[in-house]
Image 1: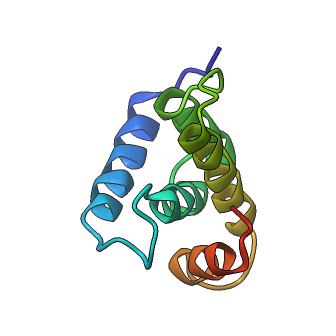
Image 2: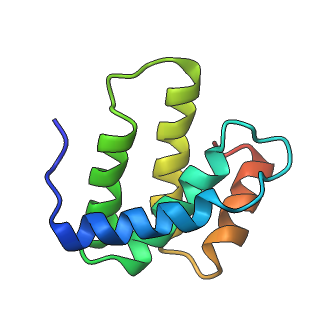
Length: 104
């Protein structure tokens, strides 16, 4: 199952997800995979619990037992965002570069 999250972590993740959901779709990404990446990167950097919080929030949002093509790509994008959070640069730039390179 998915790890439980505290109220502060949930509120932080939801705030970031809400902000990013308002952004325009990046290029040809109707599945919003770039948004998944950016949200995971930002939650990893900005929320208490870091990458663990991002991973747990992703687990609840995109359960690992969902295996359709869109969900599998969401899982890759979520993981990419958590990985990119350790790199220098903005989450937006890192996720756009990763999407353009085909990382997820």
